Amino acid sequence: MFDSLDFSKPVVRYVADVLREKDRDLYLCSLFAPVQARNAIMALYAFNAEITITRKSFDEPMVRQIRLKWWFDALAGVFAGTPAHHPVLELLAEVVPLGLKRHILEFLIEAEVAKFEDEDGIKTRTRWTLLFLQALDILGARGYKADKAAENAAKAWGALTKLRQNRENSTDVIADHNMISAYRAAISEVTGLAVPALLPIVLTDIYLERIKCGGYNMGHPIVRRSDPGVMGLLRLWWAVKRRRI
Image 1 (cartoon, helix red, strand yellow):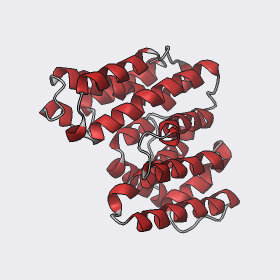
Image 2: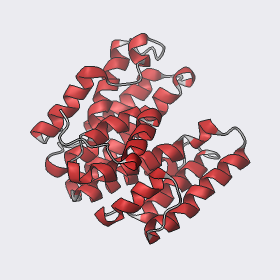
Image 3: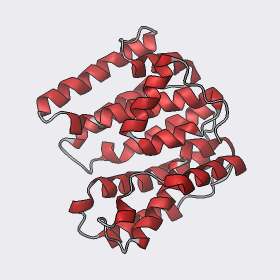
């Protein structure tokens, strides 16, 4: 299913393991990136996963801030070609020439800091857009249509992620589902090189279908499943194969 998968390099294998553990959805999406861009997409998503997991990993706000500042400061070494001894940073340094942008990675950290004070702030809403646009950059697929699709895909994926992470706290699942569906419906057809960067659209469809099938009950077993399953993998593969979402 995947062409030329090669995790023989320890740094790549480690980053893949990090991503698989901390964000399985984006890990699966990264596997379908073109081989020449796969390490870059995987490194980007793993960096995002390391940043977003900070909230769950540290209880003390001050410790969270210190950890995020460490990541922020470490980016200087990444873009100078002298990364700190951390596999995610080392792989990021390797793929900088593929179009990685420092200001986007810095913004991902700033957005996580903003979460501590304002869950629905502008930075929180923008982070997914920038992540998807950075993936498009790596694939050389930027353009008005692709960028617009990325913006709407980010709104849908961000809202869906929030709903799935706060299952017990959602007061109106139907309203949230309708909002996410509206964002999804606003995405025009994605084709060509942009498809691998926007594969979370495929997963959005799958999870929306599950929520509906589960009667909008976030505690239903089908809704609580944390991965898209075999059929999800096939749908990801088919989107890449036909170069269309």
